[in-house]
Image 1 (cartoon, rainbow, N blue to C red):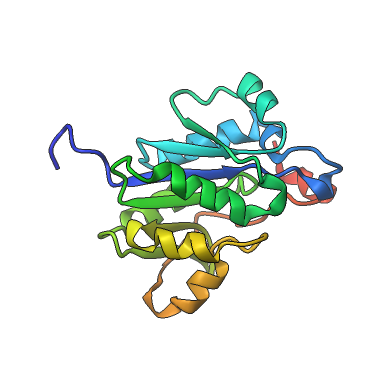
Image 2 (image 1 turned 120 degrees about the horizontal axis):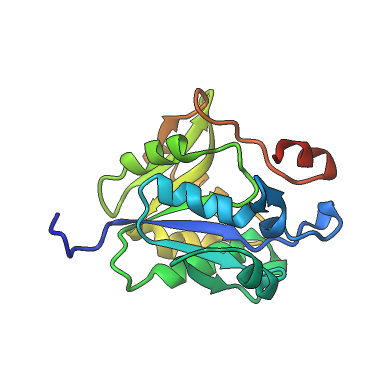
Amino acid sequence: MAENEPLPVAGLLLAAGGGRRLGGRPKALLPHRGRPLVEYAAGVLRAAGCARVHVVLGAAADDVRERAELGDCILVENPDWADGMGSSLRAGLASLTGTGARAALVSLVDQPGIGAEAVARVRAAYTDDTSLVSAAYEGVRGHPVLFGAAHWTGIAASATGDRGARAYLKDHAAAVRLVECGDVARPYDIDTAADLSHLE
């Protein structure tokens, strides 16, 4: 690949959630290792080799912009974030259109147990525009996931509510390459007050 050619895999971080089950604390701003969680999660995508990272913001977007140091990440605001993850996925994929990216490596802000090693494994499985790759934990599909650009339109059309790409991946299960990451990552979510114990 020539030096001036865009890297094909872009990171896409979904960080718009309002933390309804956390008493309305936006997940992007939860403290982790002394900084907002969104900053940590974006750094994981960078460390995994994504030169371009788009971050979808929603709840408290202005506060996130002010408090999180996101460097040269592209910040994408989703005004419909309250409709669920599907709207954020659609906004993120739309923001990548025309950038030269040929795949989106999608991660969630509330999974700090998934670090750069697991994300890099999924990224390394990219082959071309038709790639569909998912991390797996003891054989069960999880995050992050990689969508080749050929799938973006179909995923956007099916992404509704909090389902994200679940329905699309189920319909295309035979094409999804699973990459086992259970030996290097823990795929828990930060959804409830009890889950806050996972943050450092």
